[in-house]
Image (cartoon, rainbow, N blue to C red; front, top):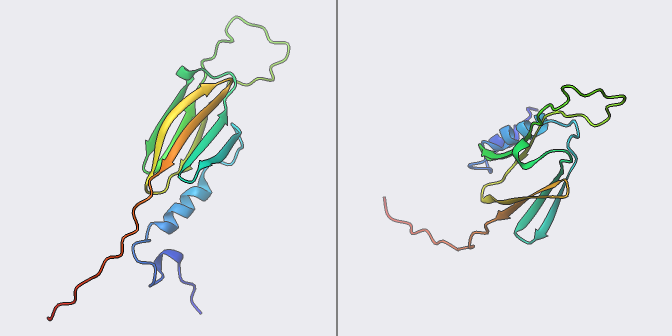
Length: 137
């Protein structure tokens, strides 16, 4: 018995990219930094919140690339001339990616008390019944 790939099933027309999407999502970083929450704020909206303590607005970049929301953080190293007896707060960079479905738009981003909030909205298309006319060949 041959195993059929999900995106090549004969009843799933137009879903060829589904398998690539699943693979891309599985390969995204799982290092846990920075920690984040995803919440549904209404039937058609979501909010991603990242804990970015120590980062300023200028240290962060938010882009949408190929149906992915990409949030990058890079702090400036200001440790020159300072002597640390203990350094538990690392100034490390990060990149966190979230795959967006078709119809999901990125709204505003707000920085508040060390938390970065990014709002997303999903447009809901009108469900329309379409009748197809059959013509003689």
